[in-house]
Length: 204
Image 1 (spheres, rainbow, N blue to C red):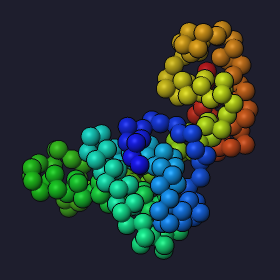
Image 2: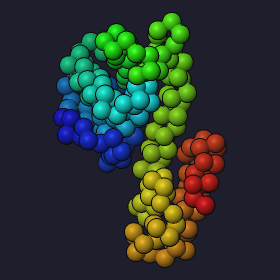
Image 3: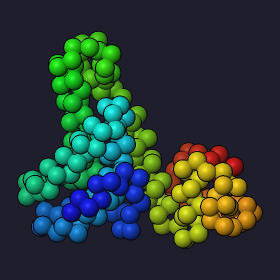
């Protein structure tokens, strides 16, 4: 358990499934199911928390606490219908509490993003959550691609050019372009059109 704490950018081996059945297994003390949830959701929850706090180190601590609390209180989670939403809300609440504590101890608004009344800028939550979920959907879809396509698209998202990918994988630039086109074709039915458009521009 928690062997993947460093996995902020990890794309795991488990299938992307975070539904009620998985949570039920966690409630029943299934550590493998907990690891599955951790591998699937650590990166998007970390990204959301980092965007809210503006501090990667604090975000890592917050997200680790969120997952630890979920495991420790698993027996009381029978009412939870959507474990993804539970994790996002728990991370958001902890992030906002973190920002409040900073303000209380340091008394300087420039250290954190605060509203006029002194409350954290929680209006940022929905845009951050939307982009976080989009990234999660994208990674989940890419995870299901054939191995050659998956590697090319992972490197594309990391910002590598076609020529750089070709050099890294020891294949021709035309082979990289072919795999990109193949990946986009396979992803067309798996991800929203606007996200596919982003991928199209990244791939060119």
